[in-house]
Figure 1 (cartoon, rainbow, N blue to C red):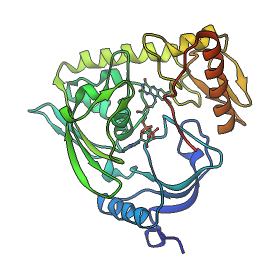
Figure 2 (cartoon, rainbow, N blue to C red):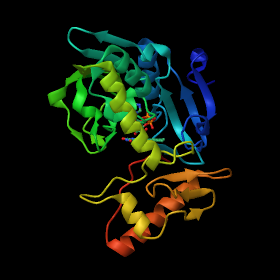
Figure 3 (cartoon, rainbow, N blue to C red):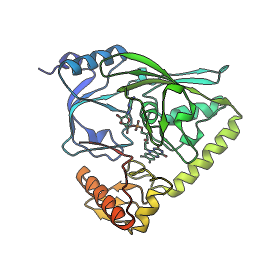
Figure 4 (cartoon, protein in one colour):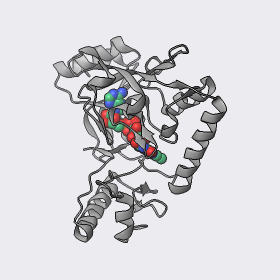
Length: 295
Ligand SMILES: Cc1cc2nc3c(=O)[nH]c(=O)nc-3n(C[C@H](O)[C@H](O)[C@H](O)COP(=O)(O)OP(=O)(O)OC[C@H]3O[C@@H](n4cnc5c(N)ncnc54)[C@H](O)[C@@H]3O)c2cc1C
């Protein structure tokens, strides 16, 4: 009998990860668990630990490539509404948000409330937890700039908080080692809602015009090497439009890989390896993946 049998309302076995990633790729997770609340999350962590089951934390799957063979462990998804609560302190201009909330929802609320500071995150289809964990952002700023406090749970079930100054927010990385970001407090600044909406629109249009929106992708595949653009290197290596199986380098933005019908995660991985090899041969630059690969 499954060790999660009595949690049947939140745990299933052999759930295809293709249902939970933006690439729509990935084989089954041995266990797929969507705890209803924090107490149940702690129970799930305890059982994983006692039974030596590897834990994987899933946000909105927008920065993930999961192998066709799937994941031999428990994929834990903080998708219940209890992990997506949003609480505003107008006087302090702070917003406390559950890790499962979508960034998009937070941005919409910021516009309505006239709170500025997160506009640079428009167009990022992730959850608050996943975005904080990897310090999502772009050329106009990143989420770390507005984080004030983070509540975390580690893989032993220990719960604790970290203040802004305790956390290092680097380029698409942080020093957060705890397995679960549970909620985050953002420090924003009051501003005119119309001005915030205008800025959001401007940044969104810039992205929309340069990225293959409406395709199956996971955002930028590679981090930009110091002072260089990964997309420009891939483009100069002549790889725009290049395909392996059902995976292609986007013709719109060379740092995006687009999955088409029939694509496998293996196709995407082979294309990643091929791009790295060609860029290394041509420019002597080693590209590091920004997308996270579960295999
Ligand atoms: C069209 C498109 C555009 C994008 N544009 C950008 C962009 O401009 N800038 C940018 O930075 N990214 C961009 N991305 C990538 C992606 O949206 C971001 O990295 C996003 O922050 C990932 O959040 P997620 O919830 O989807 O995380 P996931 O992909 O589910 O997971 C990513 C990582 O975060 C971890 N994680 C998830 N939730 C939690 C949690 N609660 N606690 C601890 N760890 C957690 C996962 O274990 C994994 O390691 C884009 C993606 C797409 C598809």
